[in-house]
Image (cartoon, rainbow, N blue to C red):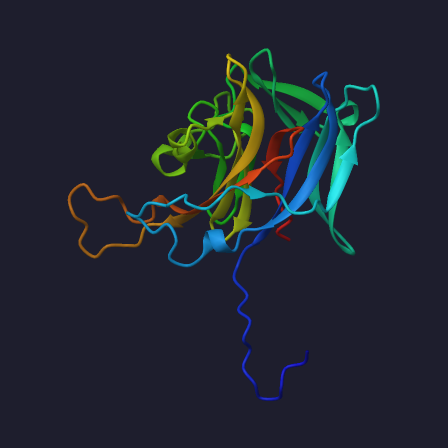
Length: 285
């Protein structure tokens, strides 16, 4: 519908993405992955103005939701222990979802299972061992130019952390600058008898806004209480800089330092065969 001449625009365009893609992994009885389902979820309500202001507590009173209809599905080859890595890329016709098989994967920066961190030079096609140390995040780390830091999920505390950009040849791990355990650890899950099953995944939406996703166990079977049903727990947070104070008080944080605001939480129940889930980083270009 065309706007009337001289009329005012009613739609406000906020910075950053509000719709994200999430992946659910479906497993067969033998433990191999059978399919990857991709869902699109709108996080607008989780970032609603005024939600999660400093000093307030988020009330997780909403019912557990079901995933919407999947927008894509990637099936693995029958009888083959294949893992797919999914990514979102920009194309001439819009956003594309690309799946790369585990036996043809290109690794740029990797932490080896045997210990130590290695980098791969795409120009020289050569590996280099950076040291016996490990990078300070689990799964995927993200560089945010606006904040001049990298962000990831701390593998031991399962919360959001920020660290310096890894530098090849430095001989030491990047310095960790912030660890927001109180603000971004999913304590709501434990309070309700649920247990976190994954280190978590992270996506940056722009304007300091992040979405963190953890796979949690919500149902158990047998006397041993083996996890039998899983869900994806989502948390919306925003990193902002502290405002400058005219007369700093004793013990107050310095202006320009980063602080984390918790904006909202939500939870989506997986299908009966779903065992893991994570969020895909959107294309912000």
